Image 1 (tube, rainbow, N blue to C red):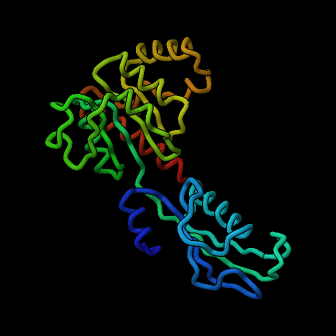
Image 2: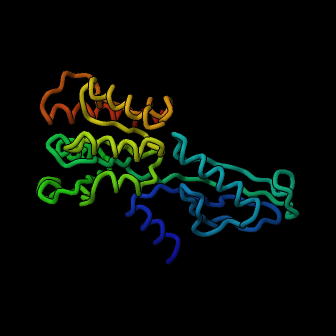
Image 3: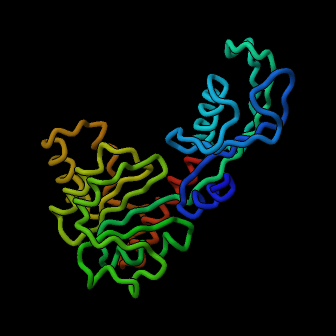
Amino acid sequence: MDLYAQMAALVAEGRPFVLATVIESAGSTPQKPGSKMVVLEDGSLRGTVGGGAIEHQIVQAARALLESPESTRVIETHLTHELGMCCGGRMKVFLEKHGAPPRLTVFGAGHVARELALLAHRVGFRVTVVDARPEWATAERFPGIELVLKDPADYARTLSGGTGHCFCITTHDHPLDQAVVEALLDKPSAYLGVIGSRRKAERFRMRLKAAGFSDEAVARLRSPMGVEIGALTPEEIAVSIVGELIQVRRKRKE
């Protein structure tokens, strides 16, 4: 598979990456202008722009770009002075970020979850809904949404999380909410929230601390979820939560 086909596959999978292109070179260099390489979030590569120390420097710059609000960056490497290489040349590399839509996993497929998933999908989130109940997690109720028919807590334990991943917990059962929170609390995320009243939220935090989670970890939990608009209906609650998700997404880009 050529590099362009691999990039198309990454876009289809919703995986962010940086395309690194050599745009200028002088002297003796391992690659010439036009050479390309793709760098993924985990540092894995597709293609090459020379290998060794020079490639390592480009990979580090590409991964930093993925975490920054910028979309492009130009870096220049001097193969002798900066990297201890004997080539004696110079390369200028253009880095271009190809981002994936922000991810939202909703645990539970009830009335609030449905409105939340549909609205989040409409404003640009890549949404997955997780619920073991096939009569609730249906394509008819969640058109265009990825559905996972598994126990929410079991599924949460398989996830690695990520700095662009949001989690909203809205299951039909308080102990199940607790189990999902415990599975996710120590994993990286952009947002981790559980539905419920302030009283429920306080009980949650007390149980998490009793289970051994640090104050810092517990402070990451958003509960009640959403911006304060006096929401009552499932539709209004969804607006409140999606509003908070948008706040988080925009602040990450500032």
